[in-house]
Amino acid sequence: MNAEWIAVDWGTSQLRVWAMRGDAVQDQKQSAKGMGRLDKSGFQPALLELVDCWLGLDPVDVIACGMVGARQGWVEAPYAAVPSAPVPDIPIRVPDTDPRIRAFVVPGLKQDSPPDVMRGEETQIAGFLATHPNWDGIICLPGTHTKWAQISAGEVVSFRTFMTGEMFELLRKQSVLKHSIGDGWDDDAFAEAVSDALSKPEQLAARLFGLRAADLLHAQDASVARARLSGLLIGAELAASRAYWLGQQIAIIGSKTLSAAYATALGAQGASVETADATTTTLAGLAMARNRTRQTA
Image 1 (cartoon, rainbow, N blue to C red):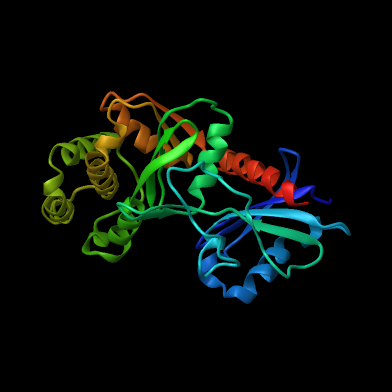
Image 2: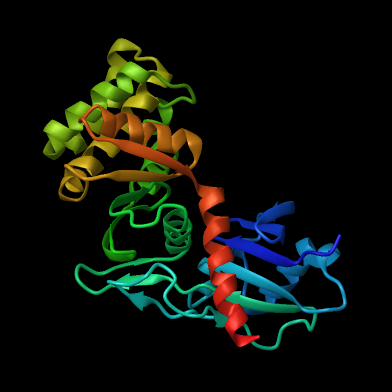
């Protein structure tokens, strides 16, 4: 099967590719060869390892977003400064590629004050706005580094990044809490912890150690501890980002489980939230970027 074009989401730890015909997915593959495991000479072989069977004699457009465009990536795609359309310019062409492909990388976005950057999320925002014309509000993109982006008149006006997901993983796996955190979940414990952190974010460090103490003294269930850890961190994030989401139209773009957690936390504060699938919006954004590249054909 020959792809009409190839969509690529290339993060730090994962590489995901889709064989596309128009807007329809024909096939998909992934590997663990993210940007963090490659030097510049390794990007093309890692890509061809997955997509070689989709290539024919004529060059196929490969449109990539994410950390592949970082300084340590395949080619550096300079950041566009906000306020900006999420995909403002023609993506950067990767030089000297296999003659069977024409590879392009979508630039990220930057904010000078307070300093912040994003790579990959701008493509998801573009994909969401493509199906929501004239949409103004706040887009939350939960993940390892959660983004809150203010959208107005089709542009990203400002954004903030919170390391909530990374902090959760570090605390769960590398701190003293690793002895007390399990793999289950408890909805009531999550909701209570969100409310606690929202009302008293200055108590976060103490509340975190309380998870260990509750295990040692009261044999707190490990699934309750996991839900409380997540709730405390997300609640503290909501307290810090309140100026973004309070009274605003909100969309959440992310995985089903994580989006549901954020929607639950925001809903408890009376916020109106809609959710969108991260893969769907990524592909829609990459399709928009592909249309830009055809200007150079």
